[in-house]
Amino acid sequence: MRKSKKKNKYESILSVSTKLISQQGFSGASLQKIADKVGLGKSSLFHYLKSKDDLLYVILKTSADKLRLNLENIVADKQLDPAEKLRRAMDNHLSIIEEYTDHANIYFDELRNLSKRKRNKYLETRKQYERILKKSYRKRKKRHCFKGWIQKLLLLVC
Image 1: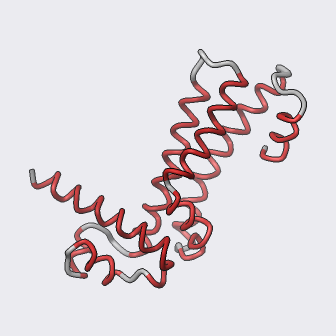
Image 2: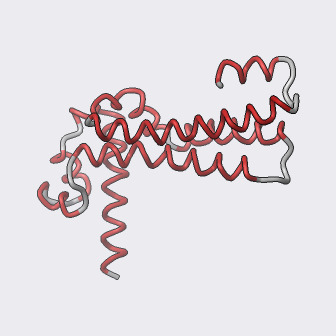
């Protein structure tokens, strides 16, 4: 019971932090504001996270991991033809942005606030996603699966 209570509080901290950072920026969303919103003392936050930098990293990595894992599953599905894989990959990308709008806002506005080490670590996750997408595209390109405007679109992305 204690673990699930702690997990629920951690998820509440992430949810509140994501909303506050998206709305007020990394600098504007103080740990005190986050603690107040989740009903904790500021020092109690450190039972759940190491630093504000760690918090920002976890927020960004959550949506990036979901995006990458979904893409891996789509690419690995041998039942789907290349066009359907492309459609699902695009749908996945847009769905994640829609589901994680605050995360997307944070990515575009606050990535620079991550420490260099964490930013590089996060960007590696993003690069994994890009590599999977490019590898899948190249494999299908060799088989001449894409023609016309789809090929031109993919050339811009990949």
